[in-house]
Length: 159
Image (cartoon, rainbow, N blue to C red; front, side):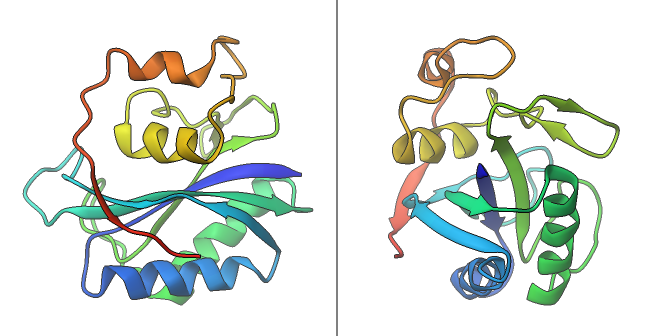
């Protein structure tokens, strides 16, 4: 199954945390594409360092809930320290889309509930697949960029 996972880090050696997390993901699937890494201002709680964000296209046999549990394990293995909501993070991994699934549980929302509101989700996601369609609205995701304030700065590329 094909899914899209966002990643971000704003603590310590941000690139190292990202690379470690992406490497751990290969235990359960294949990374098909990686977006440019973008530096972005913090969202939600603004008194913290900027993030490095990106998105991967990921192929896995894990079902969405199992993938979520695995992502939480990867965050811990990568060194994430639990703090407050939207606070600093060594690594953050979020499922943005999973095939055309729509899941509305208290602990898992697919598509991600802020997918159309966050430039650091949409810009890298559309970079790796510009033809994606929102599974609920059925609108092309690129249409959501029109009213969005873009505050991203290209930072690096990884392969």
